[in-house]
Length: 452
Ligand SMILES: [Zn+2]
Image (tube, rainbow, N blue to C red; front, side, top):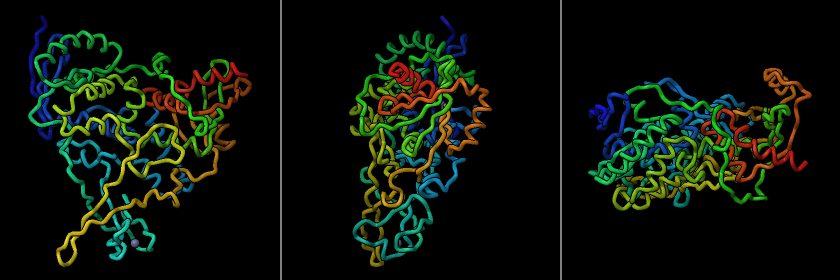
């Protein structure tokens, strides 16, 4: 029997965690934690992918990491020429995507999401007290339709807001690969069985708690070694009307996708990845994202009985199918993404101390201004294998091909249609691979070839 000892780990902001460590192997067997820590884990599922890319690109105790192709997509947005976007706020919106559950997250003891949570209304008093649809912006100093500046911060009213996600006074057991379960006797028995699984998993995936607590090297799977089968997803109906056509440039000799030539619709689609909450992505991928720890975290939440362990029944749905924030709704969204509604009212007090609730209406993604898209177009874009988006030009294409050292005679263009299935496949690949297009579209370009 290996030597096992318990350690108490206290984070800076005093969220405590008891861990059981196998000293011989220097591995965490499991951790025991209460509401504060479990809330933090579940809050990961509410984070938009763009926020995750931003947070992990900075050094913490661990050096910065790449989040599949999402990191490169994020970088390309920050470098993208603003004049080709609908408004300057589009870029801001994509680089700092708002969390549709920010109201829950801001009450957490540890909230890693540093995205601003401010809301602004017009400085014009007449505009503000309008009984129907006072305009609201998530950016300070936007110009209101009355011509004045929207610079008054307001605090929306959240009715019956719970504090975090799981109930107080319940403890949970968390396995090294982040499966969260209620701390009852039966759970520790089941966990013992999982320890064997853990050993197997450690060969192929990250052991999150071990690296977190014992600061051991992370078990990182080399993306190029991943089996392509991992990127296959179940059969889904493709929506014919919403398909997006793209031209794929393939290296014939090894069937490698070099880049995609696409229009506004595809770029909007790829950009929208940054706005998807992680939990929603897991929902669309039916729990199989290939990020093993996240898959476990998601599965454990799905297995949790909401009436016993969560603050409210509805929270389970909210966390397992989180919505995108209102301003991110696209006219031509291929994927089944739900959109959150705005905080409905804000309250202001009149001189005579009478409280008044005014309904709000978001001005940042007004269809008449932004047409519910990010890029203005019509333009042609080059999207690289790692989802780096730039404007297409003959010079940029030549430079790219020169850098890639490919022979022109080895190139072939194929037109493929991106529907729900293809779109989900790219999204899935983008989470774990820096070759999102190659991994996500490989099997689809083969199909095209057969048809020829
Ligand atoms: Zn105004």
